[in-house]
Length: 360
Image 1 (cartoon, rainbow, N blue to C red):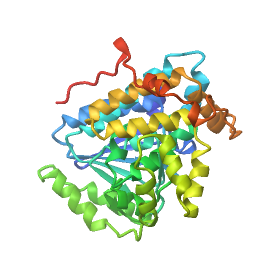
Image 2 (image 1 turned 120 degrees about the vertical axis):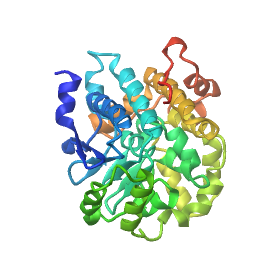
Image 3 (image 1 turned 135 degrees about the vertical axis):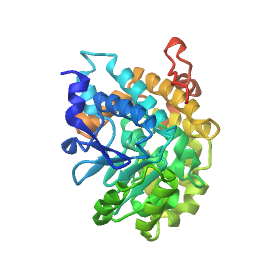
């Protein structure tokens, strides 16, 4: 079955009033993205960007568990022997879609109602409006599968308050609505039981109105204070310990702390790929000084290099395929990851660089 045929069952498009609606429809797979879904979404966003009858876009996920849990890495893993180029194509087109969303000229509202991880972050965090609910569970857990927080994580995370971005990138910590609003990852919080009313009201937007002002008005009217953010009580320790430029220095800072939270974080970091930790620190520090398109080009280089190594496929196997939860990292210790190893992940790809379409 070709990508277009698969996408017809996995993603749906509709127009209500002046709003283009996108619904990810793989609830049993937590709406994980396939290449067909990515291609279909990119094509429809291109169409709607040029359509004067469309004032805004709303993206939702089907089912009651997830907005989008990421890319469908299990299926990609299963198909990679028969099609070795599938992973590179997937990342190239996924990152291009992320850049398209970031540059989208109209309000782009992502209703992150449920699990939002990995690739789900890529199709939400770069939009103009991100709506969390009481069911939101947000994370970038890639270091646990031998990867780095990609899909533009190298742009979003360094721009969060203090060192929260580095903390999230390395630990894969899971956030609920209050933390999402506190960090700016979400622009609004709306209880799940009010989301239907929100969607209905957005559907009444007048194409003649100022779209950004109209969307802001609707979302502001439905916004509910999510309460205190658990991250705020951890902020001082996070800012102290995650302010360093190497994973070794960060872990050493955590070891000096007497707060039991530091020991919990160290235990979590000990489960991650040492290579992924070292690479991610470099990514977050570099990404703070790059524009979005430069970050996406950097992350494509990184993804290609990580796919050529051991830990990524071992992490996918252990956590997503066999689910034995026992990845064997190579190297196994952080001190065995050399500066040269990290440098190699960021090396140019020559003719295989990610070249994004020009912005319109």
